Structure formats: structure tokens, C-alpha cells
Length: 570
Image (cartoon, rainbow, N blue to C red):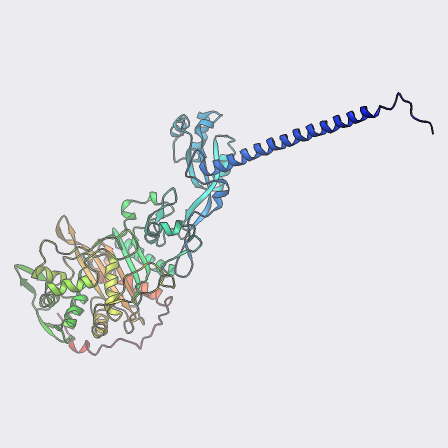
């Protein structure tokens, strides 16, 4: 084999020099490649950080978008059976950046007014010319609207997702639930009372379980709304309570409000008549006066007699009865016919000091004891609480309480005499039942059963009876205070009931504000005609849900009541 020509082979030193240059070149290329990759990674990191920053702190700070839009902002609220009452959903939001609009602003304003007519073309145009960085146009927008707005092709429009609060039962238990503001904070109801709990990331996964039973709530609302409409009342309120635990199974205030759109409701509709409003509830107070007198030793038998004239002059005033006796009457008859004259004399024997003491123990002299912030405070005689005021308070005039307080009082009187504060939270391991406070003796609580059953079977509350469910209770018709004077034609009517009265478990209170007379009521506006039927209808619907079986053969002990009722009355 021939050796290579010297002209074609570089000398050894030259070959080493070429190899060194090649390695140096490769090293330079490697350094440049690494530098380029670092620059590229830096650019990607900057972009990613910018995206995350804009998602959390964009030019409309306070709003969460992108990845955070799918994170629940607030815990759910459920009823006692786990049915959802309030939850957070992922909703569409339409917004605009006026400074980023590149198309014809007048034409865009015209199209926006067509798609979202809540504002005029002029208003949209002024908004687009304002120079402000950001405006919401529609929150919780339907998909059809989102599609139409997106089709406009305007880069200045922003269509995104954000957490939104939804009340799937719409108006059901609205005053209990309340609602949130545009930033997701509770401003009324349980949303407000438990705002921190519902917003806390550590408790967000656990729904807030209420004592409300959606089925009972729906029945109460339906019956009250029907009565409010029939009798043209300006408002209504109702409560159903477990007498043993204080749990509120249903509570409503009318007119209704839709928490999905609270701004559409009037201030009157947003007002909670069940807890915030306090009213003179009339004769529904009379059972308390009798029970106080029994525990004080004043009344030892329902056969105790009082003089019940046509009119009773006392302390410079006159006390009247709707159904005057004009004769001597027993305690049983006083309750049956709802006598102001008879009850006033019992209260007078009781005295002011003892009346104040018992009303205080029952929670009738302070604010409504409930979790809601929307709470009223009972009104009692202030400048003077003397003998005459004691007599009128005895039959429910001169003292104003919330319907929830009245339900609380009936629960205390008929559950064996033990006070349990009302609660809107379900009694469970997280919210256990606490020991109650004794107010009335068990004996008095037991004997009062027959007395209030008498009111429904033979007295003013006949229209509240629900066959088989042994309803007991008391009507209340109070003249409404108008400009400091009691009206002779405008009433607040109420009924406080208990069932089944042989083993009291549930309390129901219903109230109508300014009901009007109808042909069916023969011109009367009293409670026995307009609100007592609400109680009958509601109990007939909810008793089976609550496990109360109808039984026509069961009754409370009436032996201490019936012997003291005359068969013929004026």
C-alpha cells in the first residue's frame, strides 16, 4: 500500500491545533445553547408569573379568575335532612375594559343595549367613553347571552367564570338563609351570622346544617301565603318549633324575598317579621298568666270563680270582653271564651313583681335569643308598670314580642316547663342539646294541656283543629297601635298551637298583619276566622312528616277542665 502524499497530510502539530479549535468551537456553541435555553426558561417563567399575578391581582382586584375560579368560595348550607339550601356554583360573568375597546363604541353600545336592556344605549356609550379600566355588565349570565356577547368579537369584552352563590329553593326559608353581597360576604340571615364559618377554608368542606326541615317550611309558607292573599293582609309570619329541643323546623316572613335577587325586594319584604318585628299578640298571652297564677298558688283548680261583668272598671279605666259573660265565670271558661276581664283579675292577683319575674325567665323582656343578627327586642311598659299595666299585660296588651318568642314561650310551658333557647342549628354532635332551665312546674305544664285543648274543641280556636292530631292552642286578636292609639278596625291576629296535646312535641305560631274581612268571615277580622285555619291546614300537612300519627281515640286529660264549663253561655 502506498503511503499518503506529504501534501495531503498535515504535520502532527497542525492536527493538534485543528482538534483544539474544534473543541473550542463546540464549547462556545454549548455555552450559547445553554444561555439561549436559560433566556427561554426565564421568558416562560416571567409569562407564567404574569398570568398568575393577573389571575389573582388583575386590574379588577378582589375578583378570582382562571384556576381560582373553580375553588369554592363559601361552604354549603343544608337543611336538617341534608337537602341543599345555599351553595356556591361556577357562573358566567360578562365584563368590559372600556380602554381596550378597539371597535365602534357607539355601535357596541347599541348592541349591548339590545342584549342587556337593563341599561340604555346612552348609558352604555357613556360607560365606554368613561376611560375607566373595568366594569361588570352582567353577573350570573345565562349561556345564551354569553354566546351572543362573545359573537360581537370585541377584544375589550371579558367573558369569564367566577364563584357565585345560588339558592336552589329560591324563596324557601329566605329570611332564615339571608343572602350575600357581590363580593360573597353574608349580609343577612344565617349567611351573615355564620359568615366566618362559611368562609373559613378549614370548615368550608363541612356544610352548615340547619334545624329547618324543607318539607315543613314549604307547607307553612304555602298555608300562610294563601291566607295572606285571601284576607289581603300586608304581612305574615310563622314558626314551627320542636318543643323538646328548641330547634326551629320552619320559620317564615311574608312578603317573600328571593335571595338570588335580593335587590329586587322592597325593604318591607326584606324585614324579618318572625324575629325582627315585635307585636302585641293579644290573648295568646293569657295561658302564661294562668300558669303563673297556678305556680304561685293563686289558682288551685280550673273551677276557681271570678266575677265577669259586661264591663270591668279598674284604676280609672274600663276593660271589655269580645264575648262578655255578665256573670260569675270559672278559669276554664275564661280561657275558653278568651275573657280579658277574667284574665285581668288573675293578673292583678299575681302582681307586678311576680309577672316581671316570670316574663324574664321566659325570655320576654329582652332581645330575641336566636343566631340571626336580625333580632327585635321585646317591648314592655317603660314609664310605668303598675297594677293596671299588669292587668293589660296579663291579656297581651301593652307588651310586644316577636312571633319566635311566642313560640318559645309555648314550648317552655308545654314541654314540661323547661326553657330551651330556640336555635336554627340542627342538634347533633357539633351542636349538642344543652340542659334547659326550669320555669314552670311539671304539674302546671301537665294541667295546662287540657285547658288549651278546650279552647280548640269548644272555644274560640275551633277552626285550628286538625282531626286526629289533638291540637291545643290559643287565639289572639290585638288592636294595632296606629300613631300612638289603638285602632278599632285594624288588627294583628295570631294563633299559638301545640300538637299532639296529649304528649306535646311541636309548637306552631301563625300571624297575619292587618287581615281584612271577607264574606266567609261574616265581616269579622278576628284570629279564629282568618289565622286559626292556617294552623289547621299546616298541621294536617306536616304532622305525618314529623311522625305524628292521627288517632281519634286519644286526648289529653280533660277531667280537670270539663266539669267547670257551663253548657250554655251568653
